[in-house]
Image (cartoon, rainbow, N blue to C red; front, side, top):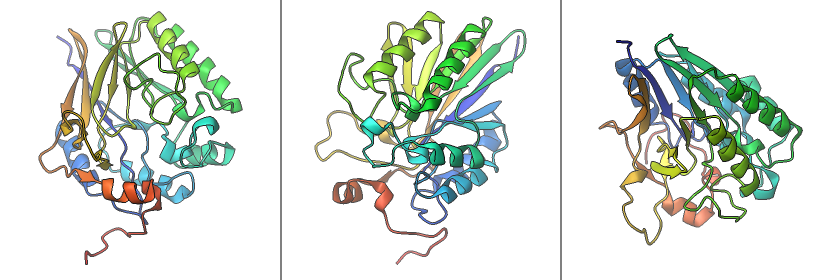
Length: 293
């Protein structure tokens, strides 16, 4: 029997050497990967604290990923390259300079990775959700890439990664917001993935684990390793906001995932600051290894 393929998805790491508020879990994650020895690691975006305005955050985050023991790729989040202009909460619209900084420090904006053997074949596809609905010339190129990557998958089990999830509670919600994909590209992505038999779409961005179903297509979001924001009047179970990562496995029974919360992962609640400042990117500087007090 073929050995299962293991893909780890980490998300929303928000790494920075000058604003190092959320770096504590990264060394723990690196050690976790040495223990687990996965076949591949994907960071599903917001690898940096404020990449759109500070490209050094991207450089530092990429250097941190260099300590991983397995091959890795990342997709860009809104804290890496900005957002579609029509839904730019942080006033950081995606543009050429920000996309070029990502490619210079981290890698391509979209990519495909084929893993496995004849017995177990897996295709990973990474997309830049900031381009979807942006009107940027790169949006069409990414769309063509995805269509080709799905048409040529040749029976491989396929897992698609985006930073923003396709939708929140309602796939038919037409609200223009910053918590999920815009309505038009959302419909295009979901229909395309259904047509080509994608096994799952997995994202990050909302800093908590979730699992939803869209016409039989699993829609998953990974928790953050950095922080979460607790609502002032939380509804229901807020434990899904605890820090962690996802372990995806492909075996003879198909593709499935596990939520992993290492015992020494710290969960930081940034609600006090975000309620005051409305965004984490305005946090004051805090150098690496800065003393407390």
